[in-house]
Amino acid sequence: MKSARAFIDRIVGSFAATNIGRAPAQRRADRLARALRTLISERGEASGAALARRAAALYRGLYGPGRTHFFKVLARDFSPEREAVLEAAQAYYRDPSVANLASLQRVAEPPRQEVFRRMNMAPGGTAMLLELRRALLEESREHPELAAVDHDLTHLLGSWFNRGFLELRRIDWSTPAAILEKLIAYEAVHEIHGFADLKRRLERDRRCFAFFHPALPDEPLIFVEVAFVNELPSHVAPILAPESAVGDPRRARCAVFYSITSCQQGLKGISFGNFLIKQVAADLHAELPNLKVFATLSPVPGLRAWAKKALKGAVGSGEAGVQALREGLLAAAADDHGVPSPAMKEPIEALAAWYLTREWIGGHGADPVARFHLGNGARLERINWAADTSGKGLAQSFGLMVNYVYDLGDVERNHEEYMNRRRVVASGTVERLAKSVEPLLVEKPGRTPTSVP
Image 1 (spheres, rainbow, N blue to C red):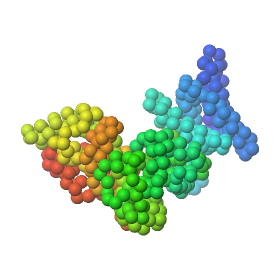
Image 2 (cartoon, rainbow, N blue to C red):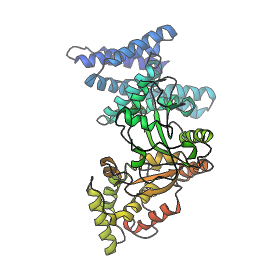
Image 3 (cartoon, helix red, strand yellow):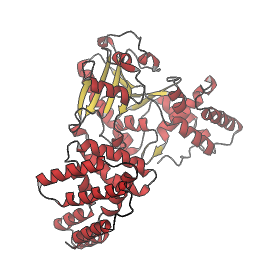
Image 4 (cartoon, one colour):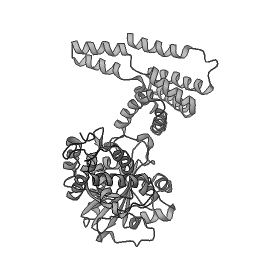
């Protein structure tokens, strides 16, 4: 019990100093920290629930400097005891028994994880923790020492929000207005311009689904918007046009996932598991067996930013023609809102193919949308020129969009290729485009760029 006493002494010592001269916000944060110390030492369920409610009320009253101070206290004073961890690790090394392993796991777990578990007991606790993590992510930009706090909260949220807990619901015009309003507010791919626009997206030749969590029954986590069309689309405007004719879903061949929006900033970077889109596709196929193709029309949000950086740093083959092309592409990349010249069509498409199939960050595809679809087992099928000429589309990806295809019989295999072999399953056309730009980005033919594992 030596480690427990040391932990309590350290916490008490931390708050024993006088509060005279401290800003009110910091004093409020310190009161919350004292309440949390009491909370994690309390064993009774009823008293624990009451303490959790008090802690939640104190946290909701924090703002600005007080919130920052509280996060720093969590990082500093609610971490494992190093000596206790070392002692338990040495004991387990000498004798790898179940008891010693359990002891090591117990002392190695940061007390702040138990803090978060107990705070979750308060009414609305899960929503509060999502808001806490959203604020924590903001603070971490200027205070990197808070990464340890985020790691612990992410660990818990990853367990609480795994795929097994999520519920898929269809959203239609009869859905409560509060949720429809959230669909308008959260839409991050293609802005919804009021209820008339929303109503068109919910017509009979469209579908909208949302994933929910039992702890947040009226708060969507992900929206998925689908259009039924006759062929794989290459432009988004006809799908989004409010005045477009409503088709018969029983005659459509293709279900196009044209917008997938993650709604909760507090869940950023937390995976809900794979095959979410496969479930939606399977449900659609059961309803409409005439559907033969399940695909997306997806943005490539990281393309232009990557192109600027990659082209500036590229050595290339050194040939005059290659260098001239590089200069032309750099000029196109620098004009954030300009419409690229048709002469740049194939080179820019080739850059996109390389970016989506060859560029990796931390074991995953560099593009965030690509990571989602490839991790869900899709195949990169086609790159579409001038598919989204809105200001956002031009600024992010030169106006390009891509089709990912979900072949329900190949989803698991494609997922394994991506996750275990770090290989993007792509069509022959996309592969040829990627290879064509190799002399521009790689010094010697056949040499593997450093960004590819």
